[in-house]
Image 1 (tube, rainbow, N blue to C red):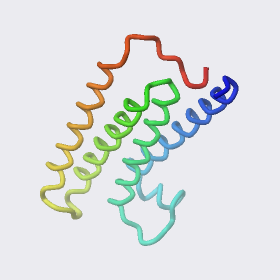
Image 2: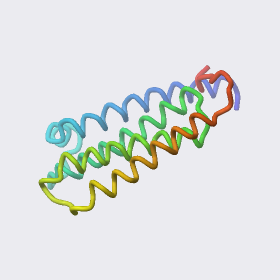
Image 3: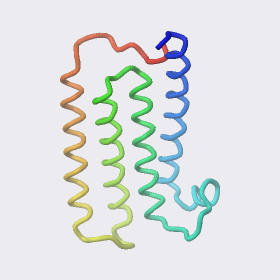
Image 4: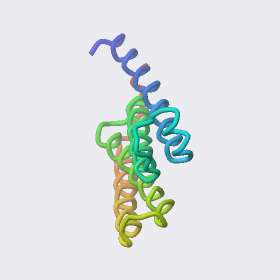
Length: 135
């Protein structure tokens, strides 16, 4: 890949990552507003908008991690960890409106495993300066 192309793709990853993170956090924080302004596809379902926001934020985190030059495995695990933790938050926020009793505990296990895996990948990365993908 040419340096010019890498620079352009790095900026695209930054912009898309910020946008996805913003939209995902909006869907989590204010699902009715998100539904009205971004995705008015009936029927309204608060929980599924929360879940969509969790995974959209995870995609944004992965894009941003890639944009700053993290390696592929760490990028994937970081996005998975952010999405998994926010998915757990979604189920905790919505436990009173449905789902299974076991959802919060099961999703907490997935969230913890994802965070531990991302942390292990972070600690195992080579000791070198990370060059942003757009540089």
